Length: 227
Image (cartoon, rainbow, N blue to C red; front, top):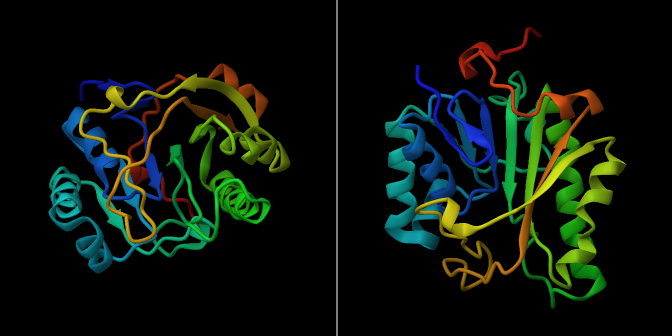
């Protein structure tokens, strides 16, 4: 099979996408690779909720992913995903969470709201560390302007014993068809201004930083651990 890449991702990577909105990011990768056989795309929403929130866009994206052999899972909580019955015996080369957000409980700059967001990211990183391969990467894409800088993504990763591989700028135009949905509130189907943003790449051991771009040879189907 021919290797195909888009930015940090390859069709040879076993990839877990967390917190998808209308699944447009996952669909972008699937179209680029021409296959989603090594991809699991998840959302907190149910399939029925997706239909209500995003109308046909989400359903079209789901059909693209599933039509190219990908796995789609709904109602997956980032805080407990390592215990999900389908995910708990699998490992991944890339675990990706773009623009994590805990929902709107108040103004973004308030301490309580910031702590809700930090707790979401903390729980995600804790679970992702259990699911990523030895030399795999955990990616968090996040806005850098105030008050988002106060989430302190790198410090949250350090708390979980993760190592920063690199921080790279994120640009929407690199991912054709990706739409950054708000995902919460009465304007959940709308987008939000990204501004300056970065993708933070973490690994669970420091020697993994030297192997970050190596392509694995195992398919997702082979990544089932023995219990």
